[in-house]
Image (tube, rainbow, N blue to C red; front, side):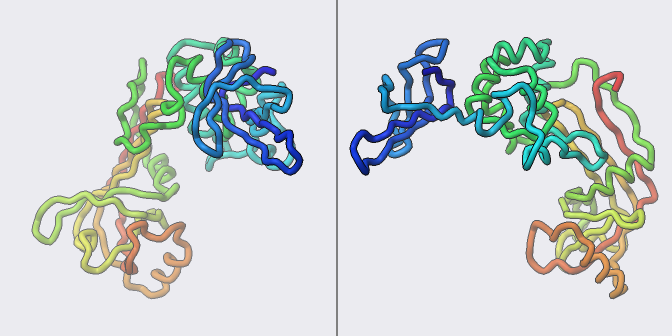
Length: 306
């Protein structure tokens, strides 16, 4: 019997009609995965030292959830859909965990083969994990974290609630200006942006809003007496960005122009029907405000040479 961290140990009952017991292996005492094991039991959440007997067997969860047991990623059924997942530009769309693994591996100057050897897994599986939206098991993450000298929390994005931009800077960053067309392309992905305006009291404010980009105009919904309603009939700035802490890169787009309230019933109905999402803030927010940029600029930070 050879186990990995995160595997499940199942103890079958020897009595007729008796209940079996199972738990997660949370500690190994031998590098080769042989007993005894520290097991956290699912029925009590207690951790005990276990020497499995003939009534015990292992369930290797990582083999059930990923292609690690074989030499290639899955190619049929739901797994095939995962391997062909693409982003809005048609490129492979890896999961955040895989991108963090790849970024940490590159920071440490390790090849995939070296990392896979340290983590006791197939290089083919590591490639799959880094390039596709895979769902690695806890056991797999523990081994990868140990191989990369980091933590499972870091690979999972444990700092997700922290403000973006606290990751390490690139060794050789390249900052370049974006063309107006590139700015329009990034704006058209829609999502959440920030409106910078002066309130009715004359105080500056920056407010996040759910927005759409329609016919070269930025549009968002608000309530008539909200802070963002003060944007109407004034010149405002609108900013949207994306910061990738896993890869220490990102982009920002800034649009400046006059804002106005849309009053045409047909235009309002068309926008409401085509909107990708309702305002996250909730409530009655049926006043549409449009910003028509007179200035559109942006910048992107990437590794030099890319």
